[in-house]
Image 1 (tube, rainbow, N blue to C red):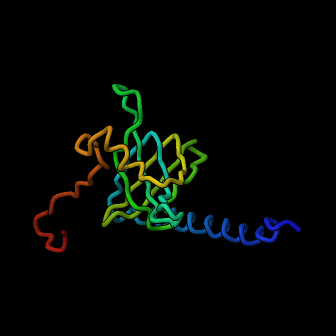
Image 2: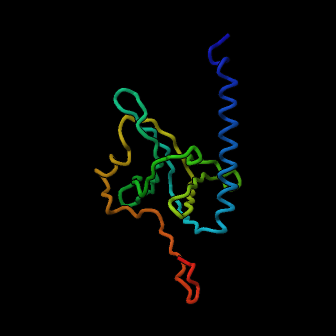
Length: 158
């Protein structure tokens, strides 16, 4: 018996849990979209990065959003967020032939689409490394939601 064979049931269970979590997040996002604003963005690459220290211990996971810059002929970071929930990993959208990621960012539901995605395991932070080539002040950042102005006579609206 191969060791990997003994882990097969566990891997199948983990995969099933990931599918269920993804479905739950999508259902939640669809219902939340009716009640809270959705900030939609497009990235050229969605990256799920796992950053490890020198001892091989995982320090954090992050989502890095990259866009192509024609003038320099390379990709640069335009935004990043810590991946705090299992549902924050890029998902394949077979109907649109792309990848999506969505998460609740404060009171805003964020939705990002991309034609490509990658998952990396590094002992350096790619987002910080990109700052040496492309300053943070040059980044476009994620779109901001503009809530509608308060209507007169509606004191409950924030």
